[in-house]
Image (cartoon, rainbow, N blue to C red; front, side, top):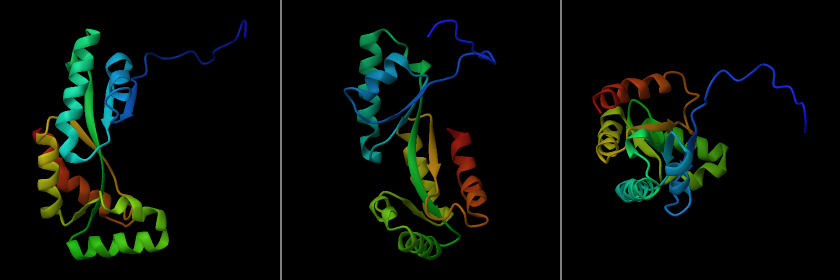
Length: 156
């Protein structure tokens, strides 16, 4: 294409985020191209993923501190664990595809969910991304998650 018009013109550089956890390709691409990484893996694999990213950065001559690393999570939070479980069960009944993800969901009351996120943040990531696949539509659940995680995230 020749003489293409780009209107409106770009307003600046858009940060690049790459999500995933592949140690050979994905994290190498993060080290090479990305401003941010959203790691997807089991929580106990986070240190290994960060080490792989560090190695790629070192090999490519990139300062690892230039990359913000978050960890992808799914949560079901409610005032009680029983309510959270009931809301997850109802969501799985309505959308059976959610059953495959239910095993990795962080589920419970604020007092049960908070320490899990504290451990995740202590593993070396800069932050977390959280989706509420089962009950994010329930009034008050997003606010409850925010109230639960704000002290944890603001501390790290």
